[in-house]
Image (cartoon, rainbow, N blue to C red; front, side):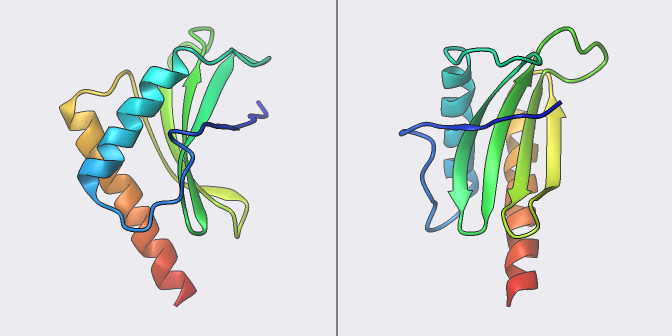
Length: 117
């Protein structure tokens, strides 16, 4: 499945400083916007939640046609290696999911930062 990612004005901005609360707010905002995004051929819709210098954080919803797969995925994509370096799948974004997703994004950003310095 080849995915294309749409950047939106309210979510597709580079973060100067990461913080878990801001990450959670952006995930929720993207989650709501995703409901108004068109489905792509292949049964998915996706948004870039934010750009972190050399990383993109992407939220993707997959169609219910993909049985046994969580419907929502957050991916941390490295523009340098052109690959997903971490991801988190869930069925929704309750408080625990948001905290886990924010921690995953913060950890991926820290690892990427350490590799570049």
